[in-house]
Image (cartoon, rainbow, N blue to C red):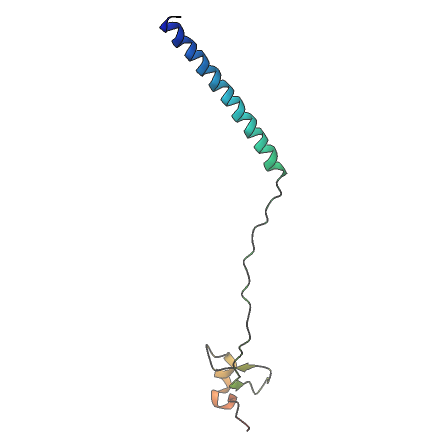
Length: 95
């Protein structure tokens, strides 16, 4: 065989290889599409709600109008503290 014949044979082999590679890629893409169609859809994740945690500290203030409402004295005071006044809400130590 001459060099030109060998080069032509090389081009033909490369062309055949590229064709087969493209066929294999197409088969893989079709199979992937089939598998993706079977995959269950994911639900969007919901944001976790912030849970209100009751303080483990003892209450220092109690709402005289509603004794179930208390405040430890830490953080922003509830509205009822400003309305009634801190002195009137103070829980006295009885002991």
